[in-house]
Amino acid sequence: MAELIDETTRARSIVLNVPDWPGHRAGQHVDVRLTAEDGYQAQRSYSIASAPEDPRVSITVELLPDGEVSSYLVGELRVGDQFELRGPIGGYFVWEAQMGGPLLLVAGGSGIVPLMSMLRHGEASGASVGARLVYSSRSWEDVIYRDELQRLAAGANGLQVFHTLTRSQPEGWMGYAQRVDGAMLSETAWPASSSPTAFVCGPTPFVESVASTLVLLGYPARSVKTERFGPTGG
Amino acid sequence: MEGSEMRTDGNAIAGVLQEVFVREVTTGRIACAGCGKVEPIGAEHAYTQAPGIVLRCRHCEDVLLVVTQPPGWNLLAFPRSRWIEIAAEP
Image (cartoon, each protein chain N blue to C red):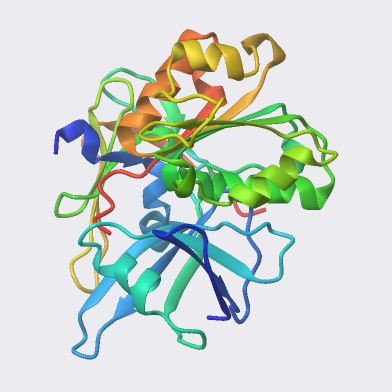
């Protein structure tokens, strides 16, 4: 464990030095296994946040109510601590620069994490595929990677970011303040005619609603890749 | 919590499947015996809260694959799948 970065009051990035890391692809995850002194084990999956080009692997963990693993990772972990990691895992919810674009990324809450790996990969590889991010958060304070997203949006790659804040908005907020629905997606998503690839990640009801809306907007079902959090149990 | 909220994607169980098949298989395809549809394993519906892991068809919810792991063993059941297609090692 090399570095801790507080992204929001409830989310923390954990930067790791992993011996013999074989490299990963943007969108993959790792399984973290914690073992207590009495031998009790708990395992959770976390998406990798860092770009494949980054020599250090990072994950971003959101603190969940009663989450026995997330409360340790967000609250108690210290630089230099060690834990067991398995990965990289998964091959389906993956984007690599040579797969091209345009890319539509839709995130609910900490569903931004694997999508951030894709955006970082896009920047690091110099790919100009065209990417749009639709990102739903509860409030401006809950937006993970806020400054980096602003920097990427101002950069040469032309990332377009559409925030929506569903619970509270800062004064003078001009952005969206609603759930991601068909009306919002028809204003923000690439038209289906441009053959985009969509990656949708977040809580299960969010992902299912967005994915079915994209299909209604003409996206072929196989062009919409989903990663549902499900009942993570923390 | 409703059943549909328990759902994740086949991609979420890639770690367990990697243990069992000793390679990444979620980009491989599986054919449903119920409705006949063929999809990448990673795109099917996965339920991880059961005793064991259940993969269901995203179209008809038939049970494609069940993985249980008693200590020292991997048990696989294929109640309603016809075939699995996994790329050979390059």
